[in-house]
Image (cartoon, rainbow, N blue to C red; front, top):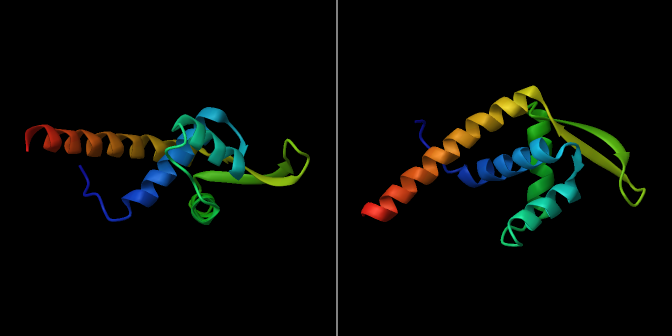
Length: 111
């Protein structure tokens, strides 16, 4: 298992965004935010200052691709979809997340 670094929260945001786009299909940033908030029952709230830099970073990394389109209210919006590289990265990060949460659970049970 690889060592988990201090950027785990950033990685968690990437994981949630990639999973959301992979399961829901092409989405604009605000829809991603709403979906994550809905699924988490409003426990997780994404701020624009976190989400949009993450989307840019993931697009730059080749995990997402983006294109302009019209939103539900007919406004211009950037839509994101996951790439093959993004699906591969998502699978790796889901595995890492599972190992991390299992390890934390063991410590909480046995410490």
